[in-house]
Amino acid sequence: MYFPAYRGRRLRKTEKLRSLVRETSVSVNDLVYPMFVIEGKNIKNEVKSMPGVFQLSLENFVKEAQDVYALGIPAILIFGIPKKKDEVGSEAYNPNGIVQQAVRKVKAACPDLIVITDVCLCEFTSHGHCGIIADGDVVNDDTLELLAEEAVSHAAAGADIVAPSDMMDGRVLAIRAALDEEGFYDIPIMSYAAKYASAYYGPFRDAAESAPTFGDRRSYQMDPANTREAMREVALDIEEGADIVMVKPGLPYLDILANLRAEYDLPLAVYNVSGEYSMVKAAAKLGYIDGERVMMETLLSFKRAGADIIITYFAKEAAKVLRR
Image 1 (cartoon, rainbow, N blue to C red):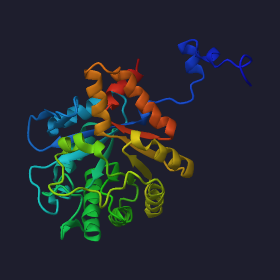
Image 2 (image 1 turned 120 degrees about the vertical axis):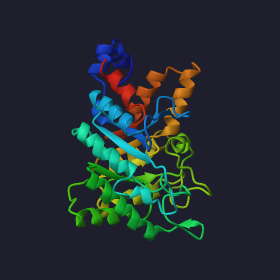
Image 3 (image 1 turned 90 degrees about the vertical axis):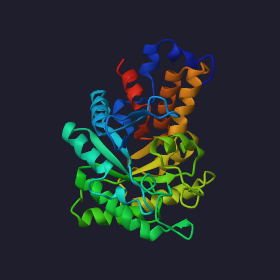
Image 4 (image 1 turned 60 degrees about the vertical axis):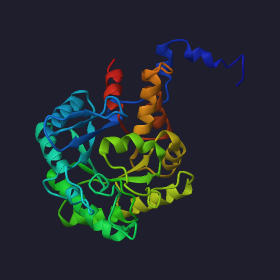
């Protein structure tokens, strides 16, 4: 069917017509809001490189979580910033660590809010890497034991979902086995399955205070050049027991999202990471773009590529737009 018999503009004339034939939409139910809890009292530190994002002490963290839920956002993802760090990230799996405290308090104050916890050691280690260091590199198998212990401690505190982000080989299997052994059969694992060694993470490392003190994470996070490797990583995590798989970052890896959606029917998450967020904020502040429209177009691109769940620092702003 060709012009003039077909005129695509017929269905674009008005917003009502465009809405009627719209193929993809974003809902508030798709959104997860990442949050940063820090030890101390009366703390609300705005992250300089992430306008509108804060490090929050427990009392402020709970208030913010309640505000998030009031907007209709179904879930938060918790990152913790401890006072003490050591070589093995002991506070990550301390039953009374900052994340564990935050989980308990949020679930007490807002029981229907889905609480997802990041399972990794990088925020808790003195060297900033995601596992135990030996001879200048992360030791994979010894790290698995600590990640499993961390995940169990989160589940015991009341977490609804645990989300390993470390990219150690075999971590999903180790965590699933540990959760089951402790009776947490019903706790899902949302795996950062295809997590790339990306330059887009810079502002997050300011927020989580988790930058490595030496080297980088390219020996365990994925090479940005690789597509087929992502398919292997996801397949392995699914075999090991992942309930939800994730692609991180989002915008530079829409092809990975689309490939995974075509291959697998598990719930698929995407992380709209800090660098993506901060670039939009910076450009909008300078008047180069319409920040709100770019935000919504970005979220729509994730849904169009196949994501079911969007983890984004825009969640609160987007929820307000979606309410209009």
